[in-house]
Length: 340
Image (cartoon, rainbow, N blue to C red):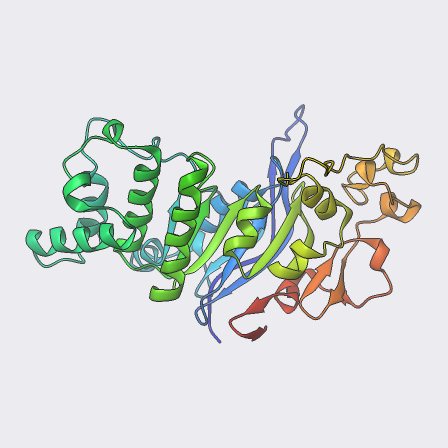
């Protein structure tokens, strides 16, 4: 099994210097995306958990402070011109805000024609128009109602599906989708998620789906990695993690999901424990909010403990379980029909 994209012990700091306070956005994160079989992995967490920083690291938009991001085994910050072109074709992105991705002075045709020209995937202009039309239909848009218009003449859902079509046009191996449905109406979320799932199933494209919403992560992904302040809190098969969360932070996220039941009360957040209130970055970062915090939680960072065949939790509540090395996070994930 060959590796397509890999984060190896990646840490990213911001700030610092003589007077500034250094902020750790991502710490000691490792993840491998194989060339085959294609997978869907959701990175989930609240604002400030490091999700978007990880996306930017995977895309090579920022460099890690420590560790490496590798494309086919090579450091992406040192790729040759030819390899960087291949990387840009293989790894595509769908951003959160579909409007900011457009130049309002150009018709939407421009955002679709540009990758076709840059990657020389059409022999003629007529072939390019045919490919664009076919791709628009693949994401549920009618070319005759879409092409020739300016971005402001389309709905948010249409603009976002054009971004999906743009990514699909060049047949990438991985799509990094950063909160792709947070800016569209609820009625269109299922459509866009269905488009992404279709790309995975029909074209063999792997997805790194970044979201704060565990509901959509559960709908689309095979695996879920829950992040809290730059560290992995829980990871594993989406079905198990969402239906039976082990880490107190994941339990809090699940308890915050509203259900259409007037008799069900949302799960509130318990007051911090006396021990947890003293926690710092030397220990578990969730300790100050955790109702189960212990002395060990503030003294040392919890490793990932295996809590099942395809799941693990970075919590001392499960310290009797097998320790999963940070570099071997894939051992608690599922790829294809079996475990890594």
